[in-house]
Length: 114
Length: 114
Image 1 (cartoon, rainbow over the protein chains, first blue to last red):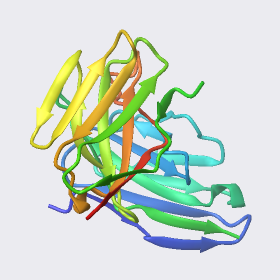
Image 2: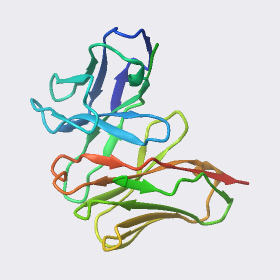
Image 3: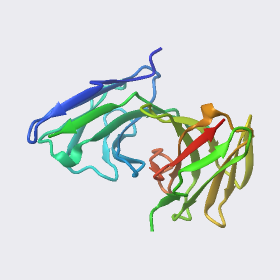
Image 4: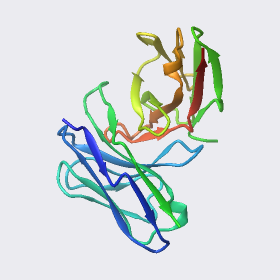
């Protein structure tokens, strides 16, 4: 039981390049999320998927796209990377249940855009 | 005004003392409240959740919620050097309950010195 996994762990891109961040969970959770974390900013929600087949924008979606490939996998794509997208990206999945919800985070992807 | 705001820190306490971390939120309809701990270079980990006014205790941790004052706090008793981390307050705003969308504060760095 690996929980939430993310690949790659670290990536360096040049401005304008594209890449896809991969996320998978083996906990059979319906909901999955992508966050970015910048110094002094906490975590900000980029996109989320409430269930397989649905995705929706979060707080900071500009410059990103997502795909909920199946119940396990939720990918984040940067079509044309910009230096402002230098950040640490976390994927999370959520248990559901009244007063029992928990979000489990992956180990993160550290992205540097030059 | 930020949606979720934490005392700026950093906070330094001696080993064995009580560490007090505070968080205010702006959306009066917020439903669910969480404290995450994040060690340097690691992903956030849920340590406490609270949904109704009052105190909730779990071991050395106590979460306190006051919805009238829009205030949530985390007390750590008998602080240990291993408690040194960034503590993130997170809130599910009104209307977001069914999707679990978290809004995070900027985090408070806690250092417990021997």
